[in-house]
Each structure stands twice: as structure tokens, then as C-alpha cells.
Length: 125
Image 1: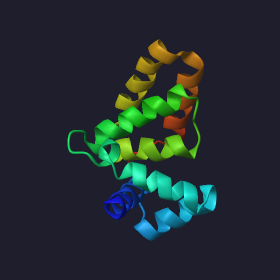
Image 2 (image 1 turned 90 degrees about the vertical axis):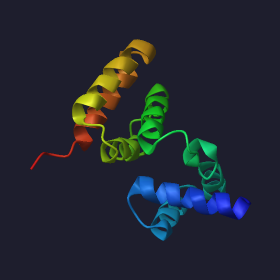
Image 3 (image 1 turned 135 degrees about the vertical axis):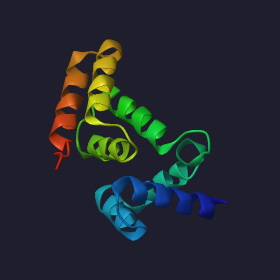
Image 4 (image 1 turned 60 degrees about the horizontal axis):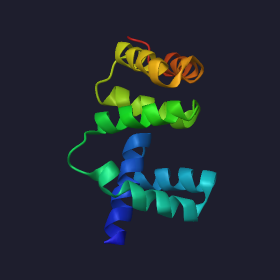
């Protein structure tokens, strides 16, 4: 069971990062170490990240909200902005999310996150 959850979690991180599973594992281990990664994969293989009742879009928006509430505006936020975009959230939707978050968590964190939205925006062809 634990091996299945670990494999599912590895697949989630690879999908979120937009890379193959070996690259995702290697990138994460170089940043936080193998013990932390093992726990992260195990957790991501559970119902929160791999359950059937939320979509990747739902999960990305929830994760963005949690990261912004914690003041995280680095590459961890960038990853989930990319996941949201790949799952149909456009720039206006992300802007509206930041405006909504301003009402609940305040201007400083949401404005920094809005800068990340703009910084990571993909230019239209």
C-alpha cells in the first residue's frame, strides 16, 4: 500500500512540475533531501492529491490559496500557477483569485502573489 501511494505521489509531483518522474524526484531530493521527499510522495499519493472528488484544477487553486496565505511567492507558487493554467485557469481567473484572497488574507501577501502571476504569465502568441 505504501509503495502504491509513493508511486502515485511521485506521479503527482512529476505532473505538477511538467517533467518525468525521475527528474521530479531528483529535483526534489537535491532541494530537500530523500527523507523529506519520501514523506512528500507518500502524502501526495493519498486522497488529498490523488483522490477522485477534486480535479487538478481544484487542487491547484486550493494550494495557491494556502501558499499565498503563508506568504509563499517563490517557485513553489510558480509551480501551482502553472498547474492552474494547464487546467484551464486563465490570467483573469488568477487575478480574480488574488483579489478574492486580498479580502481574506490581506493586501501584502495577495499583492506579492499577483506579482508572481504577472511574472509567470505566458505571453499570447
